[in-house]
Each structure stands twice: as structure tokens, then as C-alpha cells.
Length: 55
Length: 192
Image (cartoon, rainbow over all chains, first blue to last red; front, side, top):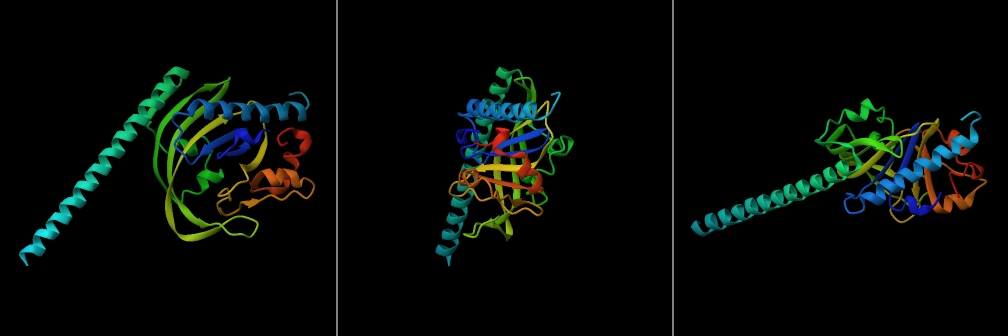
């Protein structure tokens, strides 16, 4: 996982839910914020596809 | 005496005017932000709610997350909720303000120290539902100045004896450190 996906942001996970957040009100960079969240979701899902048989 | 009364009145008037201007600017900024986020939601094909219901957190089972455990019993506001699907996954994006426990960072390793009193904190957050996952509770943050993890009962920073390189880049905390150590292995691809 690339550090650039987190930057000044935080990622939390539990069960099948990811929460990605930042202290700063995201306005102009909202597209980047959403894109990073989506990429992180992909990384975590791919990890499960590799790790769990039949998934 | 008369001069004192007049001076007091002027000071009071200036204070009221300053408050009025401040509230006006805040309202304007808030309206602008809501408009921008609503536009974004519409472009994404998401639904949008300007003043959302904070019970969303419990309804989605998020109350055990570190962020939502820090509310100190009070949510100030919960706004600009956009809900839809992002790359096929159920997603929600929102603005969130809480009154959280104050904390003090220390030089010692581990979490910060909780302090008396409370402070308002504002966030923009995205919630994503994965199709395939059974993750232990974790919090991941890039290690940098000011990135200490705020003290929350039951949460602690996770140490990795076997992978010091990871801990030089990231801070990781959990309510279940042992499960998280197994989850974030170099082979899992979740860290690098």
C-alpha cells in the first residue's frame, strides 16, 4: 500500500467496512479523496481474494 | 460616568456586530460547501441529504470505530450525506463534527494521554462496504508530526517485532492487536 493514499488521512476497518477520513473539510480535492478511498477498498478486497479459498 | 456607559455600549455593539459578521460568514461558507458537495453527489449519481440524521452511525454499525467512539457523548452536527455506489461498492460520504475528549501527545510510545475537557473536531469521512472481508478492528495512519493516535478506551498501538520498516512508515492501532498482527503481514499486500 502506498503512503500517498493515506497522506494526512486515516483509514479504519472492521468486519467488511472501511472508514476513510480527514480532519480537513475536503472540497476541491473531493475527487482525489474518493479515488483514494476506492483504491484502498480495492487493495483490502484483493487481499481477501488471495487469502481466502473460494473467494 | 456617562463616558463609561457610552464606552460600554460601544464595546457591546462592536461585540454583537463581530458575532453577527462571524455567523454570517460561517453560514455563507456552509451554504457554499453544501452546494459543492451536492453537485458532486449529483454528478456521481448519489442521493444527497444536507442535514442528515446522526443515527446513521448506529444504523450502519459504525459506533465501535475509533472515530465514532471519540464523541464524548455528543455529535455537534452530521451534514452533507451523499450515498450511492462507488466502483460497485456501497458508499457514503459526509461531514461530521463531534465534541471529543481532549488529548495530549507525549514522547513516550503508545497512545496519547486523555485530558480533562473536550474539543470540537470536524471531519470529512467516506464509508465503504467491501464485498469480501472479515477485518479485525484497526486504525491506520501515516507516521508524521501530529499523527499520534488519540486515546480511546480499549484501543492501543500495535507493535510489530518482525517488521520495523512498516512501523517507520505507519501508525497502527486496534482493539485486538494480535488479530491485527496476523492481518497486516508483508505477504498480505496490505502493507509495503
